[in-house]
Image 1 (cartoon, helix red, strand yellow):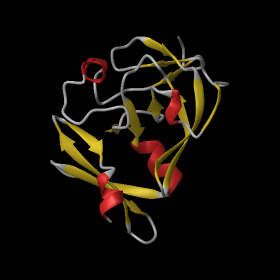
Image 2 (cartoon, helix red, strand yellow; image 1 turned 90 degrees about the vertical axis):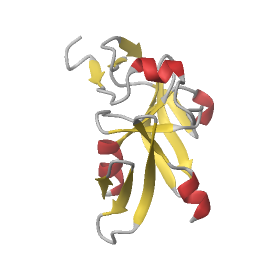
Image 3 (cartoon, helix red, strand yellow; image 1 turned 135 degrees about the vertical axis):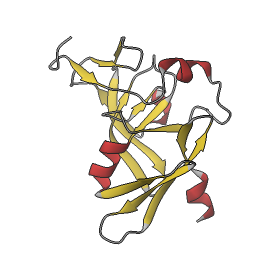
Image 4 (cartoon, one colour; image 1 turned 45 degrees about the vertical axis):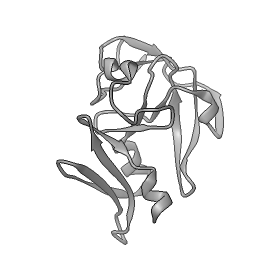
Length: 149
């Protein structure tokens, strides 16, 4: 289980949180904004626009320290204007993790975090390109931001 055989993912939300669905608003298309995740993770293949067999490391290590099998990799349309490339399909992790590091790198953006929310901004124009709301101790990506803008 060295660095060459496992993609390390340190989830801000515990695996128990993902499984328990104890937070209001957690659903199949809810994304937890995760500053510790190295990759975007989705558990349901039907939400991928493109999906291929995983050719990278076969496992990730989740917050509970256990390895979880990566079954695919692809692209997900998070909103009409925001796509997540190289997202991992990990069916055993029953939540969706949005990797802050991967998102900022891909979009050439920066993030601001506050006690109750966060925002993502274009590095050059400073335009807001995403928003998250704190609910039940975690920050969830705010899909409503895109429908109300």
